Length: 565
Image 1 (tube, helix red, strand yellow):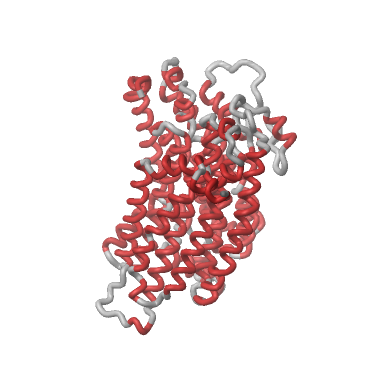
Image 2 (tube, rainbow, N blue to C red):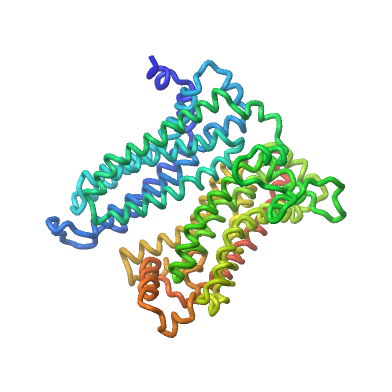
């Protein structure tokens, strides 16, 4: 009876499956996913005309490892986009209270949302099996290793899906649930990928771990989270939250656990302005003032506090390793700061225009005396101010390391270059997110599109360059792909010279080895300042072009047709 209610007669599960699997998005996503994986396998296929399968060719093992890790990262990063909005979406659609008032038990509701979100991901996972099976006849990888890899992948997707559903139960906006899900999931993905890579020489031990401890850890994390979410639905603390769109931040801070944000203290007032108690001054941009004082923090600061706490905890470990112990790997800490901004930057800009559409106030905004230029820079500057201040918190360890470690004193221009890279990254992520907000109608769709576009610009060129140098080096295509990395801040950070002694040959043996290892991984030359200059020019041109396109959109499109959309 219980299984029939949960599976066959669960209206939440049936409704979610119909909505998720019958949309054009599901078909296009499956098509893109299959084309991408098939292209990777095709390009990385061994070029030898004769393979000795008795020798366990290393090229095949590299191909399977690359395929699995790429598959794992793609599916893990797509999991929050399907699961984070399962409960928060009900709150946004104002159907949350009706769902709780139905005869369904909280466990059935949570199970329906959770299973429906994982069904689409399961289709993606199992659709990749025929592609990986093509690699098995080449040798080098056993069937049990592939089985262990897919069991680990399925367990990770279950855990990540449950984390995303739980995040959605704590937030009223899908965008906030999505960001917190990524902050919790991304460190786990990096740890698991690193573990899989380091354990590659120990194939049998890796298989045993995935087949035994993997499912056990999955159950240990998923089951408590499942019943925690169910208990929140049984006694919902946010019942009736749809009526209040603006919260009292002082009252929220008084009842919060952990980090407390105070408007009247430094540095909190940099990104949380005090409550206005007087009329606006002359020549004040009302759009900017409204966004900063009510819109960005209108739903509370829980997401903001969690993002700051998680990022600072990770920064403590990474700071000690990359800035103090192994100083030649300092660019990796800058990459962590850039990655943090990639996650947090779009949040405060991706909903600036879509929220106007969702509240049906965009037409009213466009009929005011404000010009498109004033509207856009007010919305852009408000999101940019918050994201840049939050990102700058992670730059204080860099400043502290420069003061304490004498090795950095001779490379102050490089440190300034790092700060410039982070600043341009803040501008780019906010600008691209604002553009997505002008193109889409829903905030959640705009945020996911912004993430996809930023990853395509920042990470795809670096990953393509690594793939090209591994499988077809010293070719024209490889050199062309290497030039595309000029748009990536990760590439720019690794192309700045870090130590003056790097050029005089006075490094100790360990520093030489570490720099050589980083060069081998990334394939970059540390003294390639031409690459850094190209990054500055391309990034500035991109941001100017995106902003001009948005102004043109407002002039040519929404001024005329927004009422009929």
